[in-house]
Image 1 (cartoon, one colour):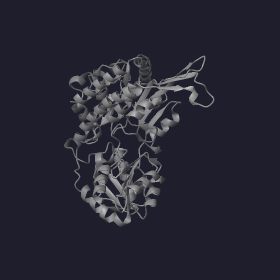
Image 2 (tube, helix red, strand yellow):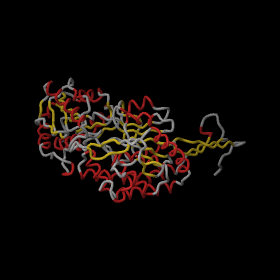
Image 3 (cartoon, one colour):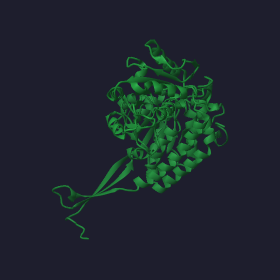
Image 4 (spheres, one colour):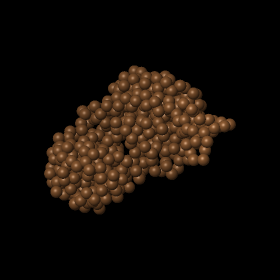
Amino acid sequence: MAGGGEFAEIVDRDGVFKYYSDGMWKTSSSGKSVPIINPTTRKTHFKVQACTQEEVNKVMETAKIAQKSWARTPLWKRAELLHKAAAVLKEHKAPIAECLVKEIAKPAKDAVTEVVRSGDLVSYCAEEGVRILGEGKFLVSDSFPGNERTKYCLTSKIPLGVVLAIPPFNYPVNLAVSKIAPALIAGNSLVLKPPTQGAVAALHMVHCFHLAGFPKGLISCVTGKGSEIGDFLTMHPGVNCISFTGGDTGIAISKKAAMIPLQMELGGKDACIILEDADLDLAAVNIVKGGFSYSGQRCTAVKVVLVMESVADALVEKVKAKVAKLTVGSPEDDCDITPVVTESSANFIEGLVMDAKQKGATFCQEYKRVGNLIWPLLLDHVRPDMRIAWEEPFGPVLPVIRISSVEEGIHHCNASNFGLQGCVFTRDINKAILISDAMETGTVQINSAPARGPDHFPFQGLKDSGIGSQGITNSINMMTKIKSTVINLPTPSYTMG
């Protein structure tokens, strides 16, 4: 049960979840809390502390001190603690998954999967960190023209300092540990600012790291309103790196942040291009999985289908048949389609649907909404003048645009301000590679829906979809910097063998 058993100390006597600082669970001096609304009931289910700017300052101070000591901790010891945290995380998958169900309406089975996946990510990161951080480079000067061998250069990767991690609501545990684990194995300290929806799941996850025995001050978790501590955190002089996953807020952060490394994934309008020779059954399965899993609330969801006109009717019928089999209801019942995260999200999605209706899109199902719950909807004959053709709905609504040529599909994909992922379905691998090269996206999937993962794969976006690259190895490298030591010899020295 959330906040029970080993997690009892993370809740105060009024039932408000505490924040984590200097190895202790604390109540904010503000005396205020932030409500977390259950998407299904649309009533307050949890409350978290509304931290103050002064409390953020104290967190940064302790994080800076703890990092200096942690950087002197042997790599094997860092990895050992991460493996322990992974085991604790998996051991407590049930209460954490319960939080995901109540906070973000994630289907129960998917919620458990997210926690287990997160534990696997932490363990893999520990192993990968030992490998790549345990190696350096040795360079000799005479490899560059005009030089004798009088200089030996030793390079290694060293930590950045304090990493600020800001994950999104849709994967508040997995996309938190994807930032926490690389930061820690690299020798950094970590300050986590979880999303409001998903904050309690994140706090439970942080307690697993606490139970694993990490040093005080190394990991902190502050909760509160973005309007009060958001900019204060991202512009704080004590922050040496920001890893952010979310939406337009990331663009604002990138403009305000100091001269520090940024790792950002900011959403996408992932296009699915269907060629005439495609396996339509395979395409239909992936379109439904990619477009409607977790009610379309994924950055890598299929957001627009671009299908050749000659096979469009057949594809739409196959997709319609599969959409009709999706279950709609509560996350506790493990339904395929569950309520979207907030009422404002549901209103935004409805606005896109009404715009498409007004402009003549074909509704393959009746549009239906009850509260935050929106039934899955496939829109055919969508045109470029409709908002849904370009905007990211982050909901269970999928537009189909019929195209007369591959070039038309590539043009539509590349005209988007986003460039996260895309996919192409064809039996011709040569065409697939040519289209992949032409699509301006960070990743192109061939004959499969877009996806983030496995978690060690590189994951990056172009244009407004982000800065830098994620994936375990890339994240570890991004959260370090190169240190060189040069040995100068009085005379050239060569190995004779």
